[in-house]
Length: 145
Image 1 (spheres, helix red, strand yellow):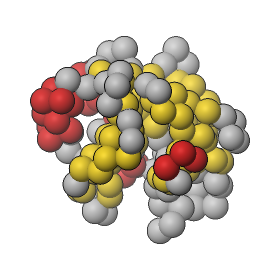
Image 2 (image 1 turned 60 degrees about the vertical axis):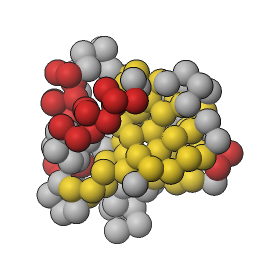
Image 3 (image 1 turned 45 degrees about the vertical axis):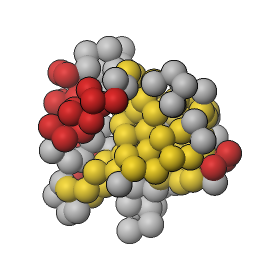
């Protein structure tokens, strides 16, 4: 499903271990994009990125349960310059040159759009929700299980 929200575009992909969602978000002006939770077989995501000429530069992780990061390595191989963003105290160790630990209310740009990190431990100690205040949009991972 494709959603248009001003300059921020969103495409959802359903699949993975437990019917997880993976989201591709991008700025329509700059074509810079991010994947939220690489939890689905990535071929369809890769094809969509290529078709739309999206420049993937970020992967946002809502938490480090296996099913939400299952295809992370596939993305890192396909997009070697992409950086990973998640909780500042991640329970998984990532490459320190590629991982950016986020603090509560820290902002991340997706082109000309901004996403704020909301640290939401509960479902898992390193849970993060990603919030776009302009569009009143929240990516929750399993926080709203």
